[in-house]
Structure formats: structure tokens, C-alpha cells
Image (cartoon, rainbow, N blue to C red; front, side):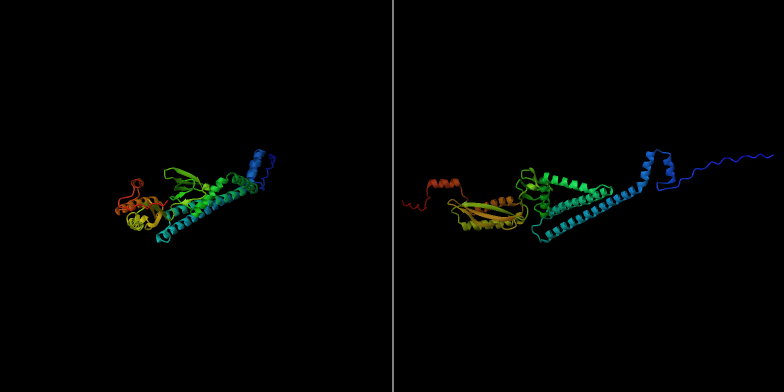
Length: 344
């Protein structure tokens, strides 16, 4: 006898979820087992990750392009500065510019190049920062307006600083003075140690270091450009023959110009200008000479010594106030004609 078994009950299987726009079936299965807040966060990340990736790539591309542009600009500025320095050195070697100072001009070109490189970097990175903020969805209109207001406020509050910076830029561009020059800046006189956009550093003759604001320099005298003038005044007795004294000083000046080291430091033979002052007791003869910048004081001392030796060798005495007074007290010299009587 055969026993019939009933068929087992059929259990409906869950339908596999179809993929939709919100994500894959696997993610939906996981979301079904999590809390609603976590599911919403995961859904939001799933929907926006492509936009974030694209934005990140655009920001990375902006940074790379900005770095490349900055490097190209800085290299171009450096090459231009080197070209200017080479042309200045070639001009100095060729003798086309007698007053050229290649080292000082090289330092000036280097300073201008540094300023231009800093400005180029600021412009490039500033533009890149604005583009990055735009990619992040930040409205640039209010930001630019606020920066403009802040800039105006800073301009009024820091106008001295702005004046100093602008003056420093014009000092560099116009080549008014350079490192190593001796200048008279009004506030102080000394040798330039450093030129900044805000201050100029000087070392005075007594060793003091002065920091002069560029905006406070109303006028500046450069004592190191071109040539300097050495001027001395030679005083002789009033009874000396002017022509003879003139010839002796001319010969002494020519002899000094042939001696070392003055054969290089004296750019011209000392010139006897003539009588500067005349009195009963003495005559003053003025002599000038063009010398290298910064060597005027040393040249004047050398000229006084050389002229003194030449006058002594020729028997021309310089006036002595005490001796002249004693001669007047002793009366007329022997053999001298008596002074005519003055009419009443």
C-alpha cells in the first residue's frame, strides 16, 4: 500500500530590490538595517561624491596652474635682471660710461628683481585663492566689497607706511643711490648699508647706524656718484709775488698728480684758480682738483702737505700773525722808505 505525502507549503521569496537612482541594491539592503539618520547621511554622500570629486580636481588644477605660472614669471624676471647686470658690466668694461658702478647697479637690479618676484607671487596666488573660493561656493561679491572697505581704512590709517613703500620703490627704480654709496639724507649722513621698501640703513662716520624712513627723505645728496671736488686754500704773505706763487703751485700740483696713488685717484691735474682773498698781511690762493668719489678729504690733506713743502723749498713763507704784529710794533724796517706824512 502506498502512502501519499502532501506537498510542502510554498513560501514566497522576497523580491530582489531593483536598483534605482538612490544607489545599488547592496547599499539599500544595508540602509534598511540602519537608522533613518544614518541612511539619509549615506544617501547624501552617495549623491554628492561625484560633485565633490570634480570640485577637488578643479581646485587641484587651479593650484598646479598657479604654481607653474608663478615659476615661469619668477624665472623670466630673474633672466631679465641677469641680462641688465651683464649689459651694465659690458658698458663699464667698454668705457662707454665712465661714471658706471657695476656692483652698485647689480645690487639695484637684484633689489628690483626681488620686489617684482614678490609682486608676481602675490598676484598669482591671490588670483588662485579667489578662484578656489569660487569653487567652494563662497560668494566673492561681499568678500571683495569688505576687502575694499578694509583697504580704504588701512590706507587712511597707515598712510605713512604707504608713503614709505612708494618712496622706496621710486628710489630703487630711479637709482638715486645704492648700497655702498655715501649720501646726505637730511636726517643723517653716512654710507648706505641696506635699502628697503620702508627704511634706508646708514652708517655714520662715527659708527652709528641710522634707520631713515624713506618717506622722510625730502632731498638726498649722493656723494659717491660721478666725481668729487677737492679744494684747498693756500695762504702766503702779502708781499709775495702772485705770479711766482701761482707757478710754484701749478708745478707742485702736476708733480702730485704723477705720484702714486694719486695718479689714479686724481682725475685731473690740480687747477690753480687764482687769488681768493687779498689783504695787507696775506694772500689766499685757491686750488681745486677732481678726484674719485669719497677721496676728497684725503686728497685735500695730500695737496696741503705737498704745496707746503713746495713753498718752503722756494723760500715763500706763510703769514704769521704774531710776527706781523711784532713788526708793526717795532716800526719800519731798516732801509725802508719812511711813510709819507698824512695831510691834516
